[in-house]
Image (tube, rainbow, N blue to C red; front, side, top):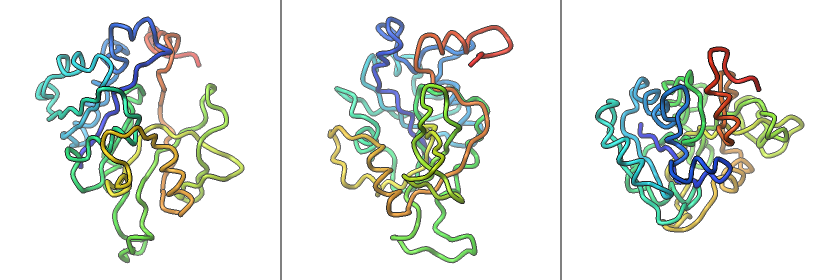
Length: 238
């Protein structure tokens, strides 16, 4: 399985830090956010990793290199302007291949997430081992988390590993997901396209699966959140 790390965002809320440093290179506990993710992927045997970039993208390439120092093989997908998540995937399709792939945001911190679990979530069989028709199988598998204070309304409902748009209690999408490349056939490389509307379209068809992740997970969206993660032992207080 290949993985893609989204690293093209400008990080406006992290200014002035992101004026001179791409957000994924900001350090948490002495290590860039994106390096935490690369090392976690390599531990799970996911070593072919695509990274898209736009703002200060050359700094990302200069810092990470070809990935060999991490035990990975890194491929870069540069964007003149950030194309959003679905647009970034479409632009990188030629690097991702035709098998299901993992995609993760470059600005989250979840050091204990076990990426080994993602490898089989989109197998083409139902729970009894029967092959599924193309129009019945899941095209995406999302990892959801309990709603953080900054996103109390959540994104999706979860019912027996099925993700839906409607539900009394919604959860927040962690920005960790597994996708079939064919899901992005309608997105032209170079176009700006967000992932959310596409996920909601397939969720309405009953073709998005998912589960709740209960481990440590932080979306590093502000300077204050970054500072809290870098507090002495005891960790963040929110």
